[in-house]
Length: 346
Image (cartoon, rainbow, N blue to C red; front, side):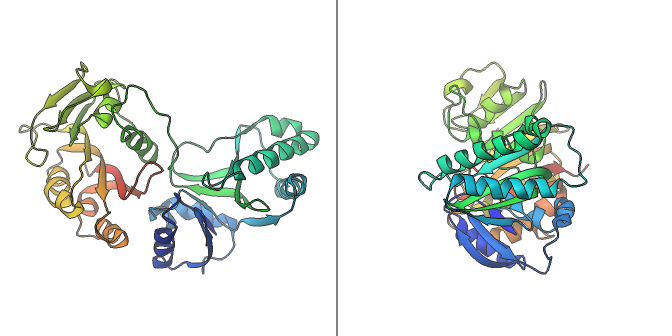
């Protein structure tokens, strides 16, 4: 089983997989290969959204039972991949668009060009054999989290790649920036919507605790949501003087809704100790149902990240006690932090 993660967090990925009972046999830049008692059955992926792997934070993409290919040239790798794909199609009919995704780790110089070469050669071979199916292929990962079927290829090196017909997606992906966004953190909340499978809508209400300089508030307001941005610091860029954003110069830890008011969304991205945030913001907001759904960042730079993951998921945590559809991810745009999304219990 191959798991991919953000570069620089391979050791934390290995620790998380090991803690889940998966034996890591090899790892490289942005990936870890492991075996387990789960066996080498591709049907495993059908249980992932409700299973153990769906709860992991660091993997962005998991390939169950991947096939490994080695070759010295682009054409050699493409030919092996085409044979694998055509053989796997026996008994299967493809009538709609399907993902044909080639991935590498950007930090390995030149590997992207190699992957592009193999992708082009594979496409040419597929068009010669099955032109109709080739025309339906799309190069992007499906939006959202959960299982997906198509062809997923990962290059571990210039002459080594892994491929699988099925994958489990964590939902993490690189997002497009917006010139009006006042900060890089805008990208995090945009990515979090994909993990949750929902985003703010027109006329919904949002409270953004620790809003400055306003990246998350701007993200919600550009969709037509009405935002209360709570922070003693200034708003900037597209968030400054936005007609749908009300800036309140208050302490995020002391802000609470008026009696009887429930907001559609709670945003919280504070540079604070995570336990302090969980106790003083997550606890009361979820217990009192002051929001219907949430996107919350918890910083793990000064705490044990794996211990924090366990605390978030423990039955006594405010998330476990008061939330549903809970997902914890280390996003593509996260640094030393987890993004937690979910909905409050009705």
